[in-house]
Length: 184
Image 1 (cartoon, rainbow, N blue to C red):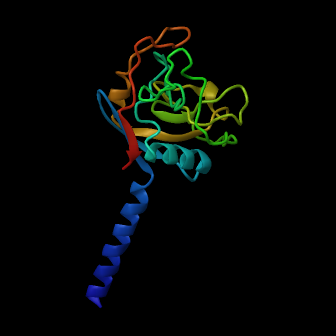
Image 2: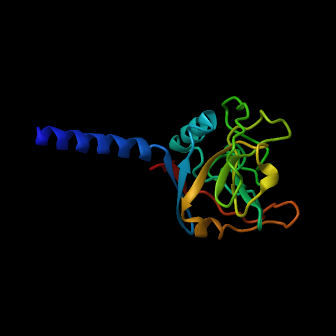
């Protein structure tokens, strides 16, 4: 009976570890590795899209095209922002997305605090596609206006090193890029 109990505990802990790890992502930057925890219970469609694009390698080589010191770093334009693509165009970066349809907003109670990952979009709340941003600092004016779906839980010091852009527009002339982004 004792062996069965231990076996049950072992398998349960193994299953629990696998469930936990599938909601973790590793973002590799020039400066180091960043670990991201995703919130599928809060924004399931945004998490699904993020993981789908990341695990297909669509974010690898994508630049941080808009970075405002003290606010956020924006990336994820897989059409015009990928330096490995023939469609790469620095002046167009930030205007593209993936070939997948746009996502409906999933506004949550997640506050836009330091390290939060949220979906970038146009003025239309249902226009998020592939782009996302990472908050450097709290941005409460974005709460319940943008779909937050994850948070940096390790390596935020590497996000802080991303090259900053123009203080007004955030445009970066020689931007950093995502080396890779994959599920852990």
